[in-house]
Length: 259
Image 1 (spheres, one colour):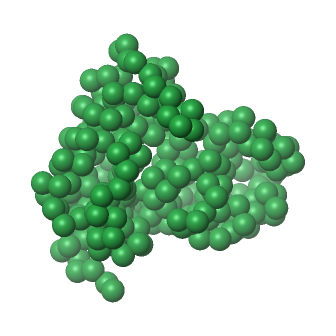
Image 2 (cartoon, one colour):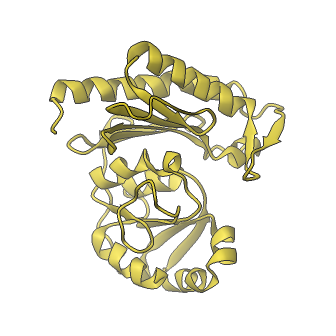
């Protein structure tokens, strides 16, 4: 089912409004003392995560009461609705806690299970990327796209969660580090913004949940990239958290490297 252009425009405007309104909520806590709790998976969570997600949920309920919401901190409500928003209030809590500015807020909207738009908001940098299928990809209002892919031997590859990949997938990590000209250890959502903006050539990631990748998927694809798991399969609820994003020709080379 193709959604009317007016509906898409309304939803995109709402997503941008959500990002703009949530930024000061998170920034109030940035580089200030915060109590840190450990979740079941040992990842950190703070008042900033919860307050930001609570703000986003309230704003969505007020504007779209029949839409579902799934968030990292407070779970799912009306998950079977035709339209579902997926939220990661602070993607990069470790960066947030250490005063590092490369944390973001991720907002995705899916229609009947298909992501139709995404937003990466970087409050500490004052940057916002948004877009999706048929919308293109924009950074602070300016159209952007992934740059033409070089061969892997000349590529700038962002390797998110490198310590985890080294521990869990040492052979693949060794090949990645040896293959690209500029392998760079990184983390979290900003690597995907860099790719979609045309600043780097690929992102290799692992350990992701749907709230980590649902917002970046439509942006990567709208920018001309391909995003899959490490076997080249489409991302979905059953994906194992390993993610690869690149232009199609480089994507194929990286799949071989990760095999």
